Amino acid sequence: MTPKPLLALLLIAAAIGCNRRDPAIPPPPPKPVPDRFDYLNPYLTRDHLLGYIASLSEERRLKIRSVAPHPTGPEPVPAGAMSAEADRIARKYGFDDYGEYCAVDERITVARMILLRRKADDAAERLQGLKVIAASARLKDPKLSPEEKKETERELFLAMEGLEQIKQGTPPKHLNEQDVGLVAEYEGGIEYAEKMLAR
Image (tube, rainbow, N blue to C red; front, top):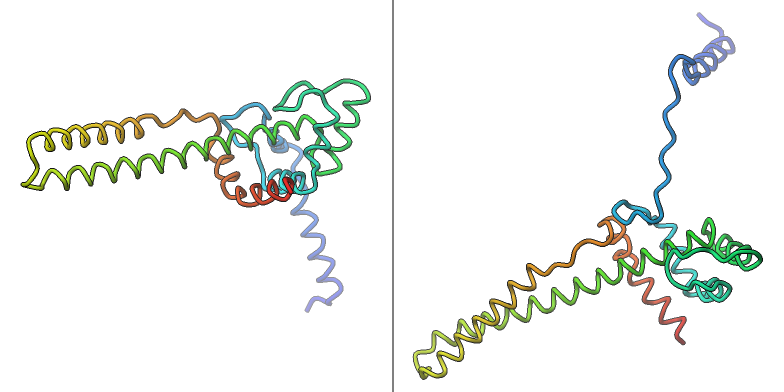
């Protein structure tokens, strides 16, 4: 029977041996850093969204932007003391630098525009659908005069045409769906923080 201290040493030695990397096997390549400006690939994280929301509720966004001459999107960061101040403020609130803050802000803005367009399209599609249903039901009325029937057929045609245009007119994707979905998840928090800021 192996003494307990010796058994413990054997287990530790085995664990150390398992964690050693074979020098003949190269280490895995590091994960690539997402490109801030490549909108086709995901970039936003939950930390980005939480930092952004916090920046709005505490007016951090205004403070960061007040020290830089380029207030929208991933613009060139100002040089000299202003650049250092913008980076200092951005880092203080969880961003790598002012450039990352702008990249996150720009993506969130684009995602919100996409979400707003989708909501508008959904509402318009529902409205056109109701017009199609109403016109179709009216056409079944045997008491319609020839003029009324002609006008209702025209209304039905226009409603169906409008419905088709909405379905075909989906805007091209300007941002990957993962980023859009993440912003949609935090949209309520962003709106609340903006309302608090406007008080």
